[in-house]
Length: 440
Ligand code: MV4
Image 1 (cartoon, rainbow, N blue to C red):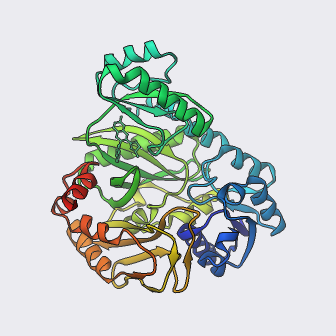
Image 2 (tube, helix red, strand yellow):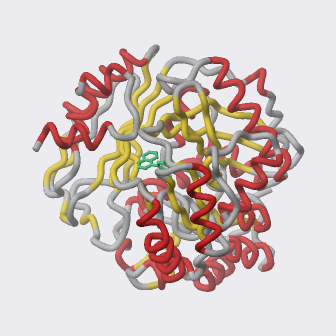
């Protein structure tokens, strides 16, 4: 049983969790920084507690302050949301040691999955296809060059402690290899205090497809289909959709079974995502995100499963009674992320609505978007019976959206969703760059 949750996050995800708490009869307490005193989550929650000044390092990343806040407000659980401490094994452990439920997988699971080399090894051992030519961590430059030549250029160097594109380097020829390897390792060392890097064959213009998993502590594990997140800008997702236009029913079943096998072997509890790169009819494991994700509403709309509610129930030790036979993927959903290009005060906000449109946001008239955090300010999610209908509905929703006072990426989103290549469904991760070129 969970009675009260401290929400150790902000923005639209904090609002999403407050809403789940209200529906579940759970008291919500929002932990906020000085920059977020006027936030919608603070207004909507049952109560709120300041955990530090504006810089995230001293507030949303301040483990001790957050745990003290939970103790002071008599919360029996902490929801870390996305980003910040959501995949921090030390935080999960300290929360647990304080006798508080961490809403997420076990600290050991977070720790294993946070090391991308270990995660890949575990995937491979469980029969999940990994990227061809990929190896364990790089030990010395000479051996690494040999292994790169063996897999053939281009190769990609990734940081073991990275993930989500942080600290990646593509190497197209042997001559650049050693220098780039050194740079990647020293960047990884300064960014993550861990200079471990690994190599993969670089796949040209792949699609990014991820499978949503839900698991309870009673051994029930199901998948909620995939999300295609191929429209990205500097590793920031801009559009997510389900089903993927390139995933066949056979691929879906195979990816889903692989994911379930891996998550069962991990003893995973809660909501998680397995990321794949897809080229043609082949898919390759990339990494696991051990948290609920920004784009989770897409899967909620095509399955009817309240992922945040079930994540909380799983953390409370409840048997979710999940069975894959009861998960029915129906229709199509698409999410567009609206990002602020600069801080500013909202002078006019009219979110879209109507049939098949959901908006997850923390904006309101008069709200000041602070400069300190993530640029994401609104997610527009549309449902349709099929991709054509869902995309048309998204075009309609974007045309209704009014936001004045804060510059956003709304124009580029309209251009993407209205683009014939996007609408055709046949594109890779290079789509955005080619649209930007057309604009210029
Ligand atoms: C790759 C890749 C090609 N080959 N790995 C990993 C994290 C993600 N944000 C970007 N990642 C990539 N990993 C191999 N072996 C290409 C990318 C990639 C990418 C992937 C999905 C969507 C957009 C992307 C943009 C650039 C690079």
